[in-house]
Length: 146
Image (tube, rainbow, N blue to C red; front, side, top):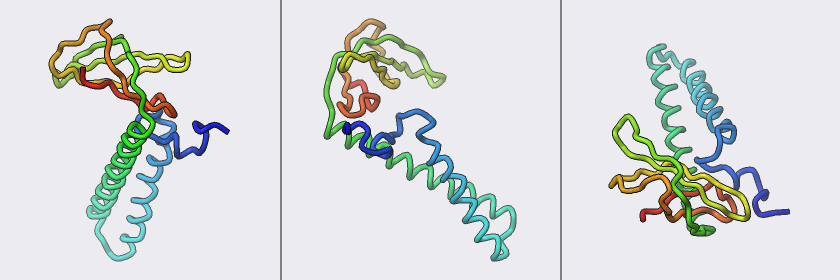
């Protein structure tokens, strides 16, 4: 029916909830386990098997992260809309970086952005910012530099 429900994979972005990342997390365990099983039949030591598991899992993680990031950016490029958002939270990380979050409205629903680094520490709660979001997946969003 709707474009939003076209397929499960169309809603599979890096910023979505953990339950949508479950298949990739599963792959990060299953694929390295299969590789370890195959390699173990060729006389590889247990220490090396742990390394094979860790490195292959890390490679899969990085690959999935890049794929999700690229899909997210393509979606924003093709379906992006700008809206005004309002900063509702500002906090300092353990690395002394200031992050802000904003709320914006689209089609009578409120959406919340992901943390955005306020490099110059100039934004305060209540400030208006520009948010870029996907009209198909509004949870795919980011605060633009103002």
